[in-house]
Image (cartoon, rainbow, N blue to C red; front, side, top):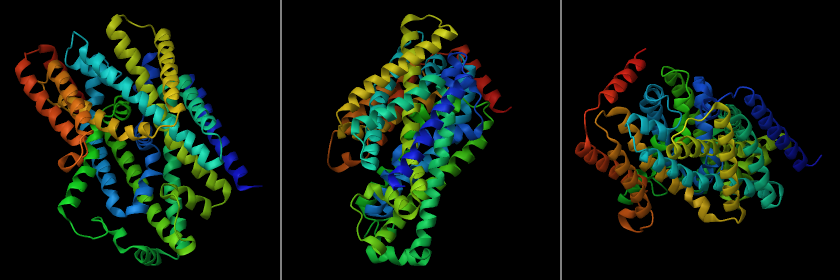
Length: 497
């Protein structure tokens, strides 16, 4: 049997399993709260792995190993920043958001929580936040579909459009059918697949080159500076420091990513956040270390056996095909597809909830029955999927490039807003609106300027501007509100239980 046949069998097994999980979750979805938030019944392991899998996408298996393979460990600073940011997110945001979102209107989306927490009777917060989510995530989902099409094209020689449609159809199917539970349960499977693959490849690769000592010598023989966190010259210059700060600033984005922090709201209780943090950060550390080691093993293996690798971002795929039986290599390919699909499904669901729960309800101001809520949610998933697929139909690198821009946009617009809403009693609706808009605009302007300080990743200035504007406007518009004070106290009480 040919290698591609084994790999196709592995891929079919994976895709059928995802559909089956969607059907299983369908029987557990009874109302809009179930469809959008799983009835707030996620355990710590499911919440942690779901957040991790929906966060990392193909970057963990393709982008990060490729960057380290090409430029060495200096590229690892983004991973360091992301790990610190993820830990702080679980520690600072998760328990408090779980408690406060329940106390304040039993909110099931980030925009609805902000609107209820700040007593925004105009609904302007929900509308602006909902539109930001809808626009950015439509492009985000589109970029995932592009990645899926390219994946099947490069791995199996399949037509780009056919591969894209296949990824979109399977992902939309289980999201459409099973909602939040299907997305979370499939994320667990996908997260474990990613972790196992990222542990197996470097372990077997190190054995292949003759052990850790030989690995070190092989890498140094290629380029000594690859093992330095300060780059090939190994010296901390002003440019290097500037680059490190910019890379680590990626961690600020976690506080404002709706598809990640919505998992916090779905926990069974605020107390579950501690166990979830340990599981989630443990998964993240093992996965990131595995991705980095995969890159370094790739440098050693290709220097040892085959010379140079033509496509640095394919180092994980190439090592899997070289070191393992084709069926196992096929499951490793499925892990890449899992990373892509887990992010698409999470973003689809958050976009759907923003359309139904925030934009639609803000304008109509009507209650939605359980059956209608699920129906509207599924219709919204379908609409966003079609729009994203239309954008992805003509392969466009600018869509893929928008991912970093969208991460900064969400981080700078929602991050400070969520933190201030959770921790500052005097935060006001107008402060939130002014902060969100100014943060998003700063990211947009800064990201299009070049040279000098403007080479800094735009999330950092956007985050700072949001905080400053939100605090100034809140002080100018603050009024004592007994309802806010009571909810703040009740949320703190829940945290001590």
